Length: 77
Image (cartoon, rainbow, N blue to C red; front, side, top):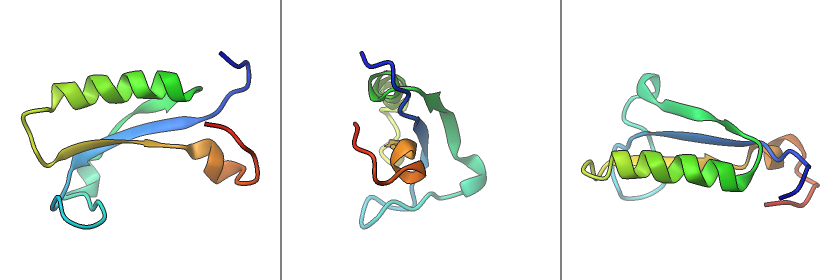
């Protein structure tokens, strides 16, 4: 594991539809799971939340590679 912090956010919520780009049904109800210093940690959190909500077909969780938004020129997972 690298010592370099690569910020990842995990968010989720119920989508309007499964068609097209994701649009949340109600942005006020978006679940901010947390901020994580590595992709692997974010992936573990994403899997846990996805498993918790597996019975709701419209519920989706996403990993946002925030480090790429903050420093787009840098490489990293």
